[in-house]
Amino acid sequence: MPMRFAKSDREDELTIERIHHVKRYSLVLNKRACKGCGICAIICPKEAIEMLKIPKAPGGKAKPPIVALSEKKCIYCGICEVICPFGALKTKIDGEHLVPVLRTESFPKIIRRVDVNTAKCEVGCSDCEKDCPLGIIKTRRVSPLERAREIVRARKDKSAELRALVDVQIDMCAGCRLCEFACPQKAIITQKIFHGKITIDSEKCPEGCRDCLDVCPFSGVLCLDDRGKVRVNERNCTYCGVCSIVCPMEDAIELQRTYVHHTPIRSGAWNRALEKLTTTQGLAKELETKGQTKAMDAVRRRFTSGVEHDS
Figure 1 (cartoon, helix red, strand yellow):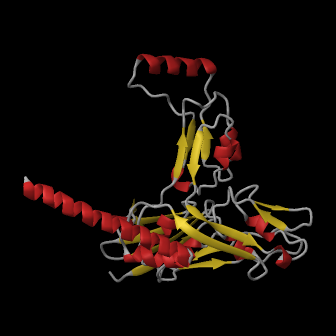
Figure 2: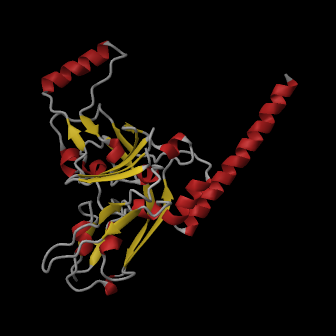
C-alpha cells in the first residue's frame, strides 16, 4: 500500500496523518487549548505549521491567529508538542501517544511547575480555579468535617497523605502564575516556562487600538493607561507572543525570550531550536551553561577514574 495523507478538521480538533503500510503517524491540535501564539510555527524544522491571521470585523474584537498544519510537510517529530506552552498538540504513532524527539533524547522536556501545599489549602476556597485563565485548575469540594477526618487519619497513619484539594492539568499550564498570586493562603508555587522581556512602544500604538488586549490569554497582563496606551505587567506574562502577531503596527511590540526551563540536554537539534526561539544572548547563556556542565563532568570522570585505579 503506498503512503497516504489524511486531514480531519473538526470544530474543536484538527488532525493530520501520514499513513504507511505498517505505521500511522498523527498530529492532533486541540483548537480550544491553542491560543495562536505561533511558537510551534517558529520552531518547526520543516515549516509544516503556518499561522493564519483572522481579519477583524469593523467595530469588532481582534481574534487570535489559527494554526494550519501541512500533512505533507510534517515529519511527526513531536517538536511542536514539546514546546507548546498550552499543551495543545499531541503526536501519535499507531494511535499511541509518543513523542519521537523525546524518545531519541534529541529534545529536552519543558519544565512546568505548579506545587500545591495541600496542608495550607483552605476548605471551600476556589480562588485559584476562578483566576486560572485557561480553566485547567479544578478544586475539590469537601466539607470541613470530611477534611478534619482526613487530617486525623493522616496524623495517626504517618504513611497516609492528605488528598489534594487542587487538581492542575500541568501539561497545559503555560506558567502565568495567576493562581499563585490569587491564593490567599500562599499555598501555590509556580514557575514560568519562558523568561524574557516585552517592550511596547506606546508612540506607535494606534489610537483606540485594543487588538493585543483582545487576544492576550491572561487577564491583567495587558491594560490601558490614562492616555489609552497599552501597558504590560510582566509578572504574569508568559512571553507567548500572540500579542505581537496581531499587532497592526510593525515593531510596536518587541518580544525577547531569553531562557527556557527544560531538562538537561546535549543536542544540536535543541540548539537550532533555541536559535529560532530565543535571543542571541539567550542562546549564548545556554551554550555557556552546557560548556560548564561538560567541563564539570570531565573533571568528575577524572577523579572517579583515579579513585577506581587506586582501589
